[in-house]
Amino acid sequence: MSKVIKGGMVCTADRTWKADVLIEGEKIVRIGEDLTGDEYIDAEGAYVIPGGIDPHTHLEMPFMGTTAAETFESGTWAAACGGTTMIVDFCLPGADGSIRNAINEWHRKSAPQICSDVGYHMAITGWDENVFNEMKDAVEMGVNSFKHFMAYKGALMIEDDEMFASFKRCAELGALPMVHAENGDLVAELQQKYFDQGITGPEGHAYSRPPELEGEAANRAITIADTAGVPLYIVHVSCEQTHEAIRRARQKGMRVYGEPLIQFLTLDESEYFNKDWDHAARRVMSPPFRSKDHQDSLWAGLQAGSLQVVATDHAAFSTAQKRAGKDDFRIIPNGSNGLEERLSVLWTEGVETGRLTPNEFVAATSTNVAKILNIYPRKGAIVEGADADIVVWDPKITKTISPANHHSVLDYNVFEGFEVTANSRYTLSRGKVIWAWGQNSQPQPGRGKFIPRPAFPSANVALSKWKALTSPKMIKRDPLNIPAGI
Ligand code: URP
Ligand code: ZN
Ligand code: ZN
Ligand code: ZN
Image (cartoon, rainbow, N blue to C red):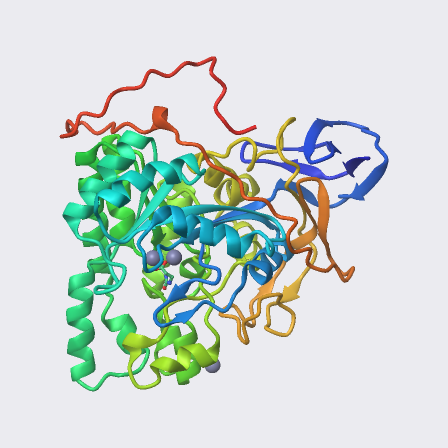
């Protein structure tokens, strides 16, 4: 059975043009005019874009004494309803510290539930010989990126020497290190200081995590990556200080990538002050929302290319879970939602306002993610041979975001009240329509697949003018060697 997506404007990271898209099985087989097939999907008046890829989610994550409420089923379903066809979720090691066991545990949880495709990143939360050895296993299991938490002291936080060891290991393996950049020692001190002053509510969370502490950690991580000779991906970039560090590193010639969140682009610190406790606590995440000046810096970074992708860091805790921190902001589970809303909010606040072109929108929500995480052009592209993860993106479907109409299990939505001006008319995952606007689509758990992401040694070389201390071997690129992907 072939399908033709008919009459739309194909919109990729490069260009926009009128064309039909022919799908056979799970793949795109032709793009052109007047294509015919067994079935037709109406794209008149809409853009045909590569399915969104969210590079940063935490579904069912055990964290801060509880477990994130969004399941692999509800999360991938909400994503699909909003035009996202793949997520990359963070695996955390369990009590035994084993990376291999953690990845297997993530497969066990996700496989029966996922409605569309997933990949994983692995968190490195400590350092020993086992971790060193098992990082290789992770890469062989299709996990080519490792996150390091520079915050959450006493829990997930890692020290600089451990981070350096892990980054060097990433250099050897052709893997991408990632960091949560915040100075965890100083955050812990400031938390104690404000708490002792009697500031126990969610505003204490914002006070204790100033942008300076994020920028310091970002600069430190960049220096460590430069010394180890690896690229670096900085997750949830919230502020000018971190953006500045990334700009500087890139100008110097380093491959440093920055990921602002849709929340940081559109919600600001006023959400924490003079609001009812639940409202503020639901928005407690790390780093916290910042002032409007920081938002402007993030938008500018997306325009200039100094920031590459927009993620959600979807870590959804119910109001009841948030209330664990009623008397102490330090124990409010950190995290906020956005999986379903990322594309429509970015379109409304970015494309509709003239800040981003539709092509830049596609790059930030899909193509750049696929390239940086080494699944391009299997994902993130509308080209022959790619997976038919496609969204018929309708710039005329409007909606007011509300927990009453969202598909997350959450009892609230941090974007509640946003009026978005574009939505997915159809979402296709590997050639199958899994969401059709207004047609009572239902989740199909177990349909999604794990997408292994191979190592990418050829891109894994420090380009800084500073000589890397560990002198990683230059691996010669073979221009005829088509990269793994399709
Ligand atoms: O507050 C956040 N960001 N929660 C999720 C865990 C993390 O730090 O990414
Ligand atoms: Zn983080
Ligand atoms: Zn409120
Ligand atoms: Zn996160």
